[in-house]
Length: 68
Image (cartoon, rainbow, N blue to C red; front, side, top):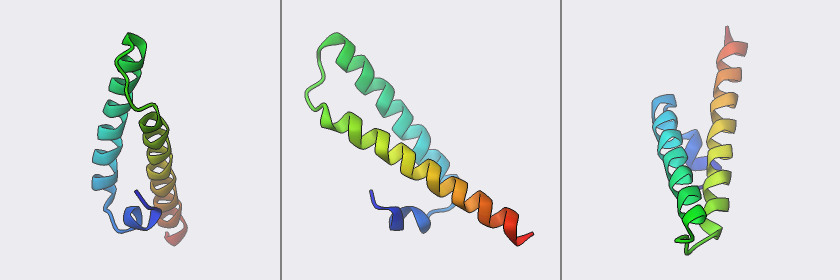
């Protein structure tokens, strides 16, 4: 996922995607604990995507606050 893709999304879409990624991260942690995880790189990707979404949400909130 690229940051430019996130800029085009609405706050509601960002929240939905964040929830989905957090669920995926939980499932990946569960798989790792039980020894069923095949792609450990996916954990890193999900974590970084969560961070990108949170950053974009904070930037949107800051822009809305400064415009008032």
